[in-house]
Image (tube, rainbow, N blue to C red):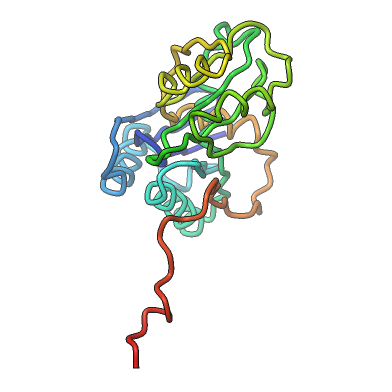
Length: 236
């Protein structure tokens, strides 16, 4: 099975190609803005590096958020357009589970995992996972002062030792947890989603259905932009 995956929803931009259980081409670059300029050239480079055509692929995969509004929309629009043009199924993977799956199995062997991503606002995008990476609750946009209570509600006393915190704001999250009486330690995993990990998640999840619905964005809060009053019309 050949999978092309990409991500540009958070603090990095990446693309990778999976061929029967191994990554044969990959590009990743940390960035806070400009994802739209980098994503498609990265995809082109990865396909050229692998020596493949889009007709050689079986599946596309892209992250669906949570993350920056613009980056999320760019990734989803690219995935949908490529799926339509190449007549390929496209599967969505959340940024939180992509980061969680990037944690080494030995590191999370008995730990409750908390992934925390930068929302570019006062709150943090967060979700807790068990050692097997099964979600312990829904993802949420949580203020740092409320993060300890959020974790306690999701873990419900089942944590064995410190909570393992990953993500691009893991340090800030760990400090907030400590202030709320939750012991935490930082993961050594990359803080942003990696398209290579998205490939692996998609390979495990895909059931072979070529008519799956297009991926939809995962929003954890309403958009900051609001429709103008009177639909933008000038006053009479």
